[in-house]
Length: 622
Image (tube, rainbow, N blue to C red; front, side, top):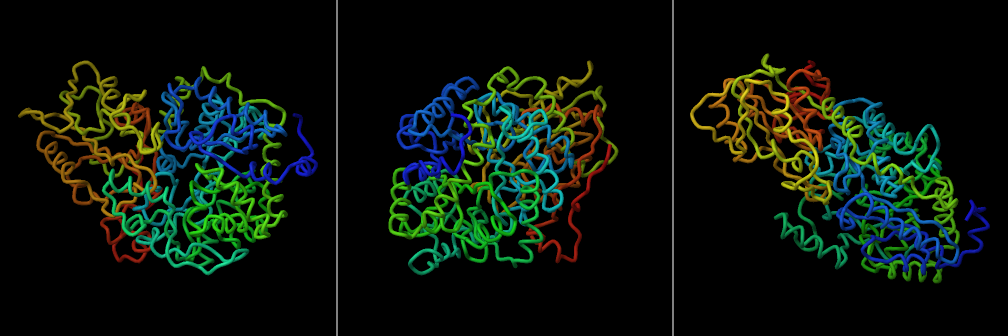
């Protein structure tokens, strides 16, 4: 099919076909034949939604089968296939795994971030995928939030600069526009103020939506579907998080931002304004609430502000299962979301129910045909801009570059530039001929712990045999002849005193909800490890793998040097490059580092009479 006249195409479409374009389904929940029969507009792979074996070739075959199904539909409208590639195309085994965004924020390097995004795009198109649910433009105000690792900074300007560099890197291939077969549609998320939610409001105080366009009163408690209830109960059993009365514990994620409109516009809206100016064609709505109204039901922010005031004429996609939160009656929930301004719904499973419910809402007059046509027009317009109606697939000839040495060199550079030297008592850089070196900590020899969450599996793959270079391996590669490097993850080395000790402490991998954490201190076992190493090393260097600042003020005095390495990804050699002086330290803190829990959230730190442990922008240069 050549690029159609969108209005003519709309005129040919039945209501069912229009609703099909507004439907996004997880790949396990339908077949290519379902796509063909119902004209489904989009398919996604959720975290862990990988083919077997999990490699670029099987990905390309899988995506291609759904695309072929779309072309067999009555009108042959092409499909959009989306994934979360938040620090590389990490759904795929063997992908180049970059530092999580907090590390890129520490680099402050727009050109580097653009190149990271371009490599990510090249590896995405190698698998047939041309839609990435990134970049996040969150501005976290509370580091206890599990998505802090996905954010560049607590500073709006830095978030805006780096996220726009990432967006351009995805969408601009060889200087061309989105129609280029190696261009990837970015998804700016999560609109809006998801980083402003407050502790204890996750599913506790949220009003489920506005009554605009709907019957019924506002509810005062969250609505959780049976499917979501099952998922939350599974979280509870696996991770020990408190789940009570249909509420997922006392957390931040998906909570309420009790902030003024002035603060929302000043702190959290600017990245979206910049995104529109930089060619954003898709924005994902946040699962959180503003002032007790769920964003997915917030007509004022979605339609009046974003589409009206800011002139956004791309399409809005919902987050995973988000519509189900809006009302106990599913048809009413769908009505609220669509009338508020959501254009495409990430169902992601029971797509037949969604399509039936939206059709009923239209037929009963609760959703107007004008709103349906507006949503479908936006989706078709973006598909046309991407050149999808020309029948061209993503340029899968880039498969040979997937996880290549060239791509990993960019990741290694990103690691080196992300490191922040917090303290240094004249011991770094280390000499390559260092005598006896002890290395301790499970994470020192675990690429999965280096990578963190959103790596092959939703919560990451610690202990897995991921391609890459561990820090221990890199240290052994760098150490000169005459240097003996010994490793014990628990730091048990006998009686000999080492010239140098390197201890790595790490947060366990997590993703979004499971990463909300009230206590940011080190666990007792890691404190004991540090103390054990201190007693056996003349010089002790600490490396911290984390998705946010941790409360380590009680341990700082035990180190001669301390490095924030964030979650560096697959290329641990980038850490060794800096530790041993081949590359200087240049990273600076993208978040203030609090002394103790009294300085969390950021508002508490701002009001504190004490300075933070280290301020945002701190970093000792090499």
